[in-house]
Image (cartoon, rainbow, N blue to C red):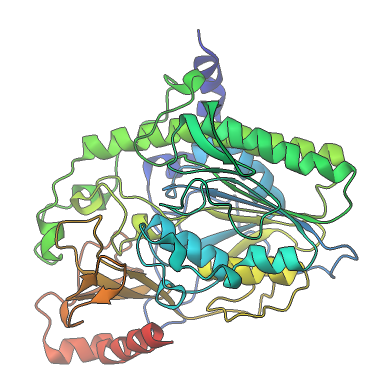
Length: 490
């Protein structure tokens, strides 16, 4: 019997208290609509962790005397409803920290998303719109630059930006183990300036180097920033050998996976026919790769405790975007639907923040402002997001955007989406990126969608399909279109 097989029953036992998350059923919440939509009878369909009663609202503690260490852990392609695989992480960060229940990727594509995390800016502002032009991101705008210049010891371990030249050092990091292209086993790394192959499993290799970086704080009293970016759970998923056959909870799908009538969806999605079985298989492989991420998080926690740094280390865990498991016939990211956009998101800082569940609309653009706020640093470059440490920072909508690029040969179209807590309005545009990663095309609106997320959390009914002008006005579409246009210009 393998270690993975021995471990599986314990993880399955945990799921007994979280059956809703395993099946993908909606989780009731009590909330008031603030964006003009209707509040849901049953809340977000993809909230991963049910609460045993109403959690206390998080609040900020008085700022500690010492600047916090910062551990940012970023997984790849991890959607919500994956808590089963990361129970130790959830118990740690969700138990003593803040769970952001409405967290979103602002662009559901790896490099633009990571650039938004680093810069605090929407993709149309930071300029990295696809996966092939990483040098378009102005590194002066990054959170690592500002932390480094403020005296933080900085380290990068794992994935940086797609198509980054392996031999190029990542700017503003004191230490790094950068892998590009990223592989699960026996990868090709830039190890502090030396390019070499390192045997072993990606998650374990970068975890060990991050632990060594943190360990140096025994003799170096500077605060540190560790950016750990795993390959998991990106396709093609290869689990660590000990978890290759681990049994995962059964999944019955969700209504969006079994949508039969897609006449109200854009043309490319009407032609998409990925099945429930394919989505189920993808889910299984993703969960197995995430088991190793959970082990890494356990080791980070144990080391911070041993160093006496658990209290004053800010730990932020999230994913660069979600992924569809056959929803609407789609088995990828890149679409403006909740499985693609919504991400797990936990923030723990015992010395500076009380725990709870935070219902604010949250985006990746909020990460850089939050980290700088915790460090007491005033940003010196523009941000589209705001610090999550201030409960007064709230918004009634969030922008998501995606640019049709060379990676996608099928006509998906560029799109932008206005996301409120209980409604979502999306426009698709005629245009794509040129070979240099810059937008081209007329920008003509070729398709639109509107979903009442309160009554239709799985986005099955596009309310604009066949709608009259009077019906569009009742839905508030003219105002939403103006709001979306303003967000794209800002």
